[in-house]
Amino acid sequence: MTLGKKRVYLAGLALQLFLIIAVSSRDTFWVLSKSRTVFPESSKNFWQQSEQIASTALGQRLPRSNPVRQILAGYLHLSGIEVGYGFFGPNIPNSYKLVFELRFPDGHVEYELPRVSNAASVLRVAGLLDQIGRTHSEAFRQTMVRMLADAVWREHANATTIRAIFGSVILPSVPEFEHGKRESYEFLYAYDFSVSEESTEQSAP
Amino acid sequence: MRFSASQRRLIDFFFPAESDSWLAILRIGLGFQVVLYALSLLGEAILSLESFLVPRLGWFVTLGTRVGLREETVLSVAWICLLACSCGLLVGVASRFCAILAWFLHLCAAKSGGLVSYGMDNFMTIGLFYLMLSPLPDRHSLDWRLRKLRVNDPQLLGFWRRVLQLHLSIIYFFSGLTKCLGTGWWDGSNVWRALIRPPFNIINPEILATWKYLFPLAGIFICLLEIGYPFFIWNSQTRKIWLICICTMHVGIGITMGMYLFAFVMIVLNVAAFGPRLGRMECRTTNLQPQKAVS
Image (cartoon, rainbow over all chains, first blue to last red):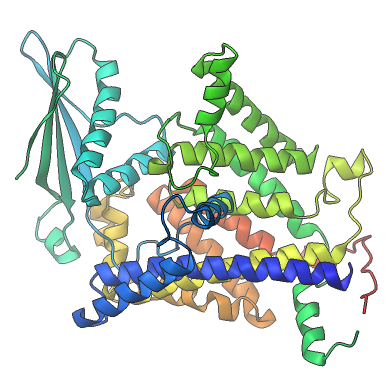
């Protein structure tokens, strides 16, 4: 291999490593600015600013249509490095649960969970529920719940209404568990879907 | 052109003459991973809108409908192609073509279901991305044995292995760092929460509670293992123990939390990156000869 070729490879590697570290730093700073960590609360502003610097380096503060941003984002996705690696850190949040209450013309009621076909799908749906739970966009939440409700409805075509109840799963600590406390649910949102109506009604706690 | 000693060391570090054992592990491991992935695939059609450059299955569906094919037909063809190229990777037939196609189809599937993708998808993309860029075929493949295809640059093999090694080091460092900054990993409460949190709660909490004294140890062990990875995996004296521990951790995650595919892809990447210098594989001679450095 010629020296010129090696230099090209090294330049490519330098860019790749820069992007990996920038993305990992951005996500780490984001987590630190949002979570309870060993750092004092007052440091959150610092982490937010750091996250913004990392985002700038990745071109994410450019307009969405900017070609540089598009190309960088495209490359990050193509190489699988668009997200950081803070798995289960710094703390493990509560999970979310979605239950569908189906009402039938004869008055009986059935309860269903989102349909999954295998173990891998369970993890995917759990990830989706986490995103629904954490989002600040009501439109996004409603759209996602509607999509999941549609899937259940296809399995129960004769149901007249579906109520989607979205809640947070509160996990007990070990001492609480030993004293008899089990996981509990905190109601967050409910959406009603009916055959005749397109619109949904929402009730919140 | 003259090299200083430091430049020479740098070049030697990034372009070591390397056998292709690691590439064979990566190809076969990812081939098996893609088979498992294809069998577990969901048919979501949620679009990722981050960039118009990011591929997705919707491209094929749109193209298919223009020539009169139904969505189901297009998706079935894509799925069969993914399964076929994963089998191609497993045995090493048309290795490069299969690696590119597997990367592309997996990416399309993962990005089409962007909201339901998780860490495993990213690691598969990373592995397949490096695999398709690496100098295939390796000498364990049918391409090598039957079609007599040869790769004549061991330094390039060494370079791509370095890329994978450095990437893994960064991954574990950041993963460990983020964990270390949370108090829950030091007192073990995060281990407990990880194991009882739906959908990872496959072990009865009653049984888990009897192991409560192990949780702080496990939490500290995981933190130190991950954050110490980039420091200890490069040292020849600690590499073996670190690799065994990290693979054991992933086996543990797979068994106790049901993340089988995630565990498998991580083990494949780790063994490909740092495994071949351990044990028997190191003793095998290679018929690849390093080229003379050009100066």
